[in-house]
Image (cartoon, rainbow, N blue to C red; front, side):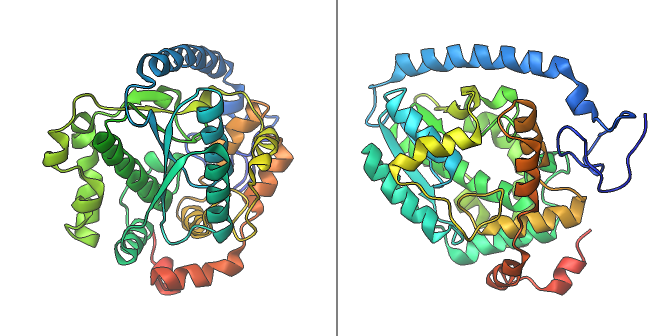
Length: 345
């Protein structure tokens, strides 16, 4: 098996030679593209998940004030997911946005237009700016997560999404809501995460190593944001299911955009090619590329290519559209110097 030179990519997808456990054949095709059985197993998993999700929705819909908490970033994927949750599945949604201080103004405008168009209740929660920036800084400059965890996501995005997920869980428990919905694709999450019961106590032990590291760099205030207090857990009658409706939809990115534009959605101009809502993504991608030698979006975009939902040319454009002229301003907001980045291992 030949190994291509550094920075070369698979000729079918966009996985680079720096990606973990990658191998190329003599034609330059990677082992992930050659694994036909993976997609057979995934198609079977999607079919089973779709049936299970539809049954769960039908059995629980209408039993609470809200049927689901929607983790809504204002990006294209979560916008489309919110649309089908309301229009296809008939769910009563409480839309929730975590304002991390780096959301594009256009994304906020999209959020307001979309929830108004769909008739959805919306709340925005903004954590302490000082706290959030300290978490992103700690995630960028230190080994908070295992390298295996970061094969499909940057460290900064992982810290942010974890905060979104735990905040959504708190809301779901308070509202006794049966579902938490997010707009992930199967490139972003594994097939076994299309739906699962979000049992906090079951996952608590596995989360502790990361929390321990964050406490070291940020302080015990981490628990206020990333943990659920016993007083709230004692109210739990049944933990909510996390369901990812986009994973069971066979739809291209172009079609997603066509579907959501009538809701008033427009693409922000101040984000990178792999994001449609968050300016911080530019910095997170930069750190990941510098640390590991590949983009955190390679796995997701390559998966979409193999599924026929994105062309290789489109994926390459996205991954190369990284406006580094914005990096200095973002680093200043985070309080991170060039010298600190040079020390990253």
